[in-house]
Length: 278
Image (cartoon, rainbow, N blue to C red; front, top):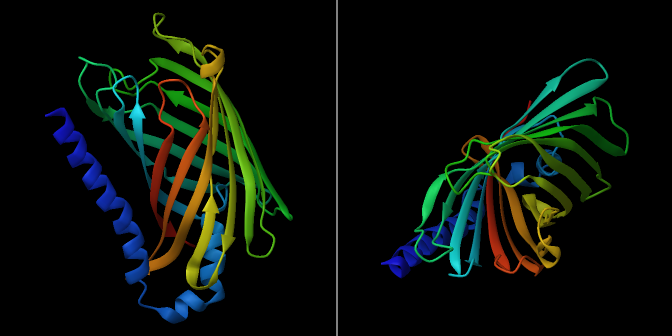
């Protein structure tokens, strides 16, 4: 029964992943729009985490061989971005991450679990008229909203910083933050976690682009060899329209060259982002 459920979940996820790319290939009906400069500008804006573009990304991450039971884990991150113009000189870019998690039976006898994970908010203060180097700073806050076994049971916060540049067809940058727990269940483990995501995108004709956006993490509370997760890989994406709605679809795969003992050594990421240019 356990194996049957895993195969079914894996099959549905695989269909979802390849469906996004198929949609990107087939749904573009306005070839003039795809060739236009506006498409390239929109693609680069969608790859900039602190642009003034309103967007709603749905990012599906599938990982395998987790825990002693080699369980399958699937995380659907809903990541809305809503920028606010505070003044002539400053913007506030509001970002949220709302994870919906399926966790297979990672330890024998505990069963699988599906539910909401801990919600994260990020607010980046960024210049409204940036130069060639675009930057933002602000807080990251994690709320213990997750279901049992899918939460840290801690309130956590810390600083976040982002910097990027967009020369020619490139979008290159990095986002980093650290979270420390400051309240929550006294019996839960303290949180001291670092995250560093670098992103390298190269834009091609007709809305296509090559992309690598791995997230390197460190759990400073873990024992020596279980501290770091270091993925390496990438994939491709495309900006296109569904009817009149601009969207961005991407498919990436990553191999973890460093990871905790019981963590997955590879994952697949598929993302579909609804774009709302002004």
